[in-house]
Length: 386
Image (cartoon, rainbow, N blue to C red; front, side, top):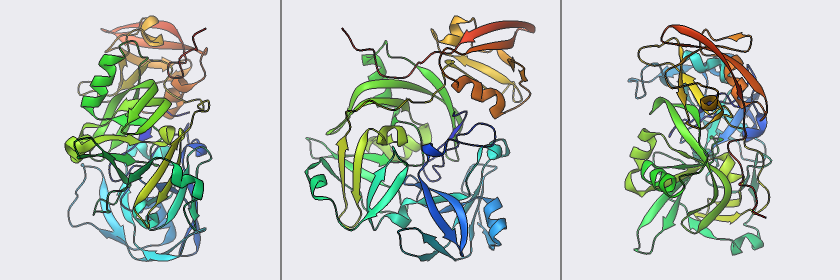
């Protein structure tokens, strides 16, 4: 279950999890050691840096070097570690330093990892990225059959250091498609493309989720489902889609066409040839795996006027709306779980299987009321027509 997601343009770490644990299958884990000590690191092609949490730095006894200025939003501590020996199974040993970022306190209980390995470290290799099994594997050469798949050129590595592909257009211009294994979202679209898709699919289902990034801060985003959608020559079927955060989209400018997170990568076979700057992508046509999502159709977040309360944002026609919940209602409890602050205990209830009934206690204009909402499978393939 996924009560919270954490993604960003330089520290795209996905925070899923219920209570203190997370869905391990929604990350690509690496068997890694730093200075010969085993760690729980995940592969994040949307990060341009290797990152450790402050707790991991302390556990390893590494020297922390604070940054001279904080380039991130207030509350996010930026700094570096001293050089250390990094060893990853099936990859060469190297010496490197790590960026240290301290997530806001209200997110700390969701972090179930020691850090991430960014794209820069693994980029010189030929890799098979398998999001279905959650594994990245180095290859000696590109498999012969893969050379017949659709190909996209990789953008040269810059100081930003993330995995980006070029989408060629008929007018000889190129768009930018990011590959982000640090996000469990599907296809993220910039505002313009999201609006265009929504206008052409007015009856598509919608739910809400929350995300955090140092560039965007905390934000609420809409999610939907595309039975079929194309990014250049790549055609994806049965994939969740969403509107990306404003700051990330602004960084890439007009060339930015979207980001593929793990849910979208599960709809592809992908080989990345970092040696020759090519990516080979073959869409999958099999039945998609179930996409865990907010089945309530509402999210409850702090607002400027209610910074310590959970205030409703509701999708019209969703389960919460049908149960009488409206924008601005304050959530007091979910079942027997009191809502006294940001907690996975109550948020995780929205991600339970369809058919589950949630008893909600809310407050509107100073008056308390109770209602029952029945969770519904909002995102998923459209029923086949007979």
